[in-house]
Picture: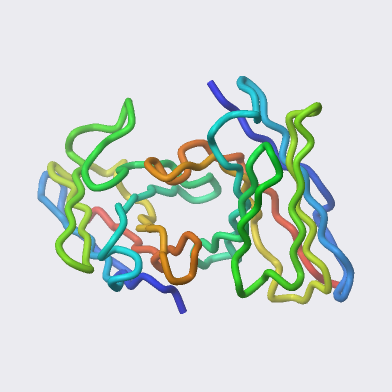
Amino acid sequence: QVRLQESGPGLVKPSETLSLTCTVSGGSISTSYYWSWIRQPPGKGLEWIAYIYYNGRTNYNASLKSRLAISVDTSKNQFSLKLTSVTAADTAIYYCARGDGVYGHDYWGQGTLVTVSS
Amino acid sequence: QSVLTQPPSASGAPGRRVTISCSGSSSNIGSNPVNWYQQFPGTAPKLLIYGPNQRPSGVPDRFSGSKSGTSASLAISGLQSEDEADYYCTAWDDSLRGWVFGGGTKLTVL
C-alpha cells in the first residue's frame, strides 16, 4: 500500500518561500506514475499545482509557473515543492498525490495546512 | 472560478438516488476521462470513480459515473447517511495541459 506524507513549515511570512516535501513509502517513486502537488484553500475547492516524474520531467500549472519549482530525490523516495513570493492567497492545505493518465490521482497524503501570515 | 462547473449543493433522502453534474468543455471533459473524488471534512479526497465508470476496489457499486459530450454525472443510488460529503469532478485539460477540478458539491442526506 503506497503511502504519502507531507512535511514542512505550517507558517510562512508574506513574500517568502513556501517549501514542502512529500515522502513516499510502501513503493518506489521510480515508477511510471507521476507525483503531484494539489492544494485546497480553507473551505474551497481543489487546485492542481504541478507534477514530476522520477526522471525529473515536470509539468506546472500555468497560473503558478513563474513562482514554482518542483524536484525529486529518488534516493530518499521524496519529491518537493517550492513556491516563491507567497501571499495570503497561497494559504491552503497542500496535498501530495500519485497520479497517472487513467486513474487521475489515486493515492493522497493526509495534507498539511500552510498559512501565509506575518 | 473553477474550470469545471458543479452545483454547490445537492440533497436526497435515504434510499433515494441523487445525481451530481459536472460541466466542462471540449478540451477537458469532451476529450478526456472524468474522475470523481469524495471528501469528508478534515480528510484528503478519495478516488471514487475513474473515467468513465470504473470504481477502485472497495467503492460500493451504488456509485456510478457517466459522460455525454462535455458534461459528466455522478450518480449515487440507495443514498446512505455516510454518503454525506463533498464531491469533486476532475479531468485533464488539453489546452491548459494540466488537471482541472470542479468547485465541489456538498451532498446532504436529508
